[in-house]
Image (cartoon, rainbow, N blue to C red; front, side, top):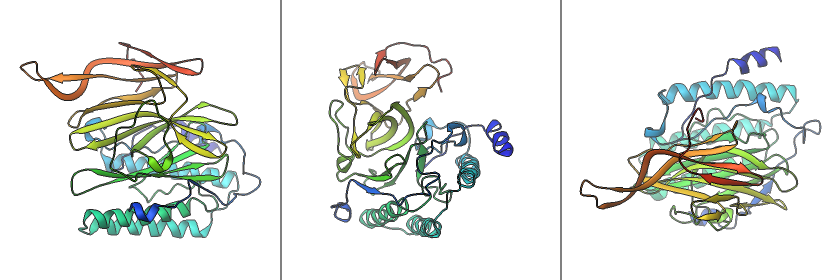
Length: 345
């Protein structure tokens, strides 16, 4: 345990990257996981024992550290920390889980080395999704690092009760197909996020079923409502078309063991009370969207319509060098414009 404390004190947080409808139709929205050992089943996890591995695909938005070194640092630390938890909590890892990881890695390797068409790539990733879903039902999977699966973003919520896995493939028309899984430690369930249509911009005032997911890579999860029906805010990145990127502040809403995306008027934003907040901006630009734990706020670039040299609208949005925030007030997050960035990143 002393070695673990030293490891955590020395930890420097970095960001890692991850860059058939028919096959998935009929999948249940969630599946129960096989129970872990009785001594650990619902034992709370110390939040200082784990660090997140993040998936942020945009080159313009990456910190100045190479992809390889960031991924390597995160994977080694995540593996060491989760390994210590598995030992300390005496959680047994199913041999089938180790085998499944090797099979999934092999599938990704074949996908990346073969010159395949979009439909073949989709079919192969559908198979990866099914294999990963089955792996998450195995004993010990919640704390298993999956460190060899560098194409999958793997993040924990700040209370370590939720784990989200997302990844994407680029299609021949320069659009994306996203894949996602949500693992809930409290209710022992795995939820499949299904993008069964092209990536779209979700409405801000509407809750969404997991099978109607818009598609995104999530890079942060924060628990905002505790209790029998917890809610978690996720920050995500997506690209609806080759000319437009999107970032989203969304809510994972758990009720009666079901998952819905979107809060109950959780945010009071630019367009009044909404279930989620969506930002769109030019594909060749970057946008900051982070959570400031100390001040309990989401802070982000203010994006505004851009104009050309003749003051004509370009049809594209971009940051204007100012920042806005959504700060928690009671049970809501309320918008305030033109705030100081400080050390929110």
